[in-house]
Amino acid sequence: MSMNQTPEASRTHIAIFGRANVGKSSLINAMTGQTVSIVSEQSGTTTDPVKKAMELLPLGPVVLIDTAGLDDDTALGQLRVSRAMRELRRADIVLFVANSQMPPTGEERRFLSEVQGLGKPIVIALNKADLGTPNREWGSRAAEWGATWLPVSALTGEGVDRLRQALAQLRPAQTARPLVRDLVRPGDTAILVVPIDDAAPKGRLILPQQQVIRDLLDGGAMPLVCRDREYEAALNALGKPPPLVVTDSQIFPYVAQHTPDSVPLTSFSMLFARFKGDLDQLTQGVAALDALGDGDRVLIAEGCTHHRQCDDIGTVKLPKWIAGHTGARLDFHFTSGQGFPDHLSEWLCQESFAHLSRESGMVATVATQPSS
Image (tube, rainbow, N blue to C red; front, side):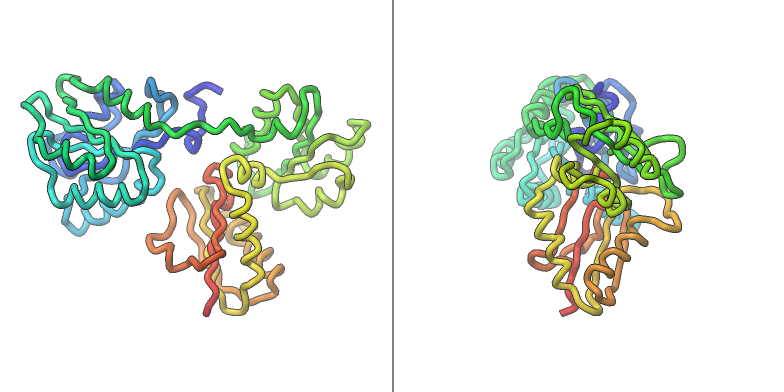
């Protein structure tokens, strides 16, 4: 898979923050050699976060996120800042841009302290270094935040190469864990059972299915892809039990019924949960469903942004499964997209949080809160 084909969730996310007109957008354009963000002397040019997936050497595949200025105190500006802060949660690295000729403001100090509290790696780019030596206070303050800092100039290009190198050094270590190929041997034929129904995207497979196919091919295995209605025929065509069957969660009971007990069976969601998540934590989250009773609230937060279907998995099938499992009359709430509700802590109680991979393309989180 080339860098340009790397899924967004597998890229290093670099979120760029700073006050208005410190040169965030100009610096992004200088780093990438492209016009990624609009540049203007007018305050508030960047409104909603601007994302650009690209290859940025020496980092590799990244997503750059340009955000609105943190010092916009208008009513609309506060909404923009709120949107920007949501990106902070998803960032792997925080690139903070400041005016090198001015000492850090109270607002900048508060923000960087908050980032440090989240454990996010920080690079402070002191822009406009072409105007003179950076203010000395940034050096002493950077140590307090555990931040790397360096002078740069978006105008002249000074320090831009060093900035890319500094970001590369903070890049999260890539996991060596395979997605599925460690469960089979080269030459094995694994069956992937894919439902094609009204909720399936037209004319294509969803990304998790594509990635599983690719990982099997990378491991020298042979994926046999079929619909649930052809599954029995696929089993018979092999002539011997396959070493692995992977299917979609929504048809798992049907596939399990027709799969020999000796054949390992899993789902695309579980493969991605194992690949990017913590299975022990997931198991605890699922077990917490048993503690739910009548009137308890359940938040289903999906990472995908697909159009809702009449038999949608997040708003229809999952609530039906959970209600059937618990036998309780539950109060379901739903969100979808890249973020979570602003006050997620209101939903959480101890041992009741299950966090799945953001690239599963399906249900990303189930958070429950007993009514008591």
